[in-house]
Image (cartoon, rainbow, N blue to C red):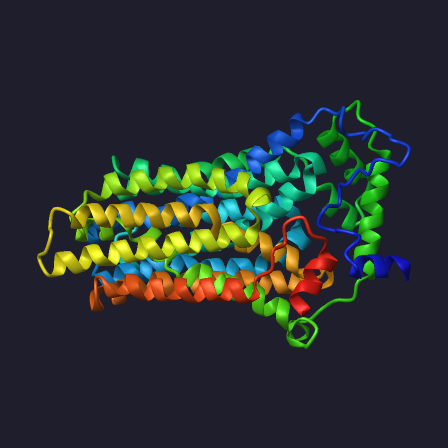
Length: 474
């Protein structure tokens, strides 16, 4: 009973199964002196999945005009291609947890790599929109799984003192993948660019043969001998892992004592505020327009009179730098303040881009309009990368009680991918309706996001789970 109470009060964090607590007597952590080269190698292999994620998300912008010309696609047909990746990702996100629990973390990553390779190959050989969309759906399914399993695997293999730093590599390599897709896409055809998308999956597929399975998963499924071997491989031959073995086993036992939570339980009076906050953050993260900008940046720059390759390379490179900056500010400025500053910058970026299209439409200040467009997009991407991109995921991981995290996390991830699909699919229709109006629609969502954040989002930096839950319920 005491264990269950500790869990509910937030005194035990099962998301950190490898905690090696120092004893009150000052005992040195056994893993501090271990050889962590295998941890770093395993992280490098895992973030190939993050790189794949970014490659897939960044593909549609540099490939747009080549695909439309070679396959004679209309804007609406290309909208289907650009957005169907999110449909596949929704299916992948729904199934990812079950696949990872059944086949293991490595099994999930291996399956996802194969699916992504098949999808890219289908895009490469496509002679019409049917096979093109089929391939895009498959890559979406693959990255939907990877979006779940990569951060889970990194968290489960990494010692506590390195977990924060290594966890940020997931988001960082997503932005790197997007940037590389834009840069390479400026110099090669869309078919060749599809082949380059195979590379990170292929590297991951090969690398998985050289890294261990998650020890925590092995412990959960009762493979005790393999669990000990994997843990020793990650900590180094000379490391004393006996204490860590015990702690992992204890965390697994506590996990088994927590009652399962169904989807309907999320909407009872005890959990509805957490769900409202988590879902709300993901809705606003998408409906401020990020995937409309990422997927169709080339079209935005062309319509504004800016060379698409120049603009896309600039903003994707900026995204990488500022994502790294945002990671360093997360525990200094605080989540809530960083989110407010970020969304305010996105609001300004949308307004600048919208004004540039108003000027172009009315043939006013035509020399200034392209500068406003590229400035608006850069301000938008920079602001999103610092806060609105990573912060909702961080807050989501902090606000849910541990016994509802799995179910609530699946729901929130599904909402995020559904919002991504709506925005990416609707962008061209809104852009056709009004080239400037679409950005003012996104700006309106920015205003609503600011109000939502000020009214409902608590500051979670440096607070215990109990304090966070109390602030939400008050």
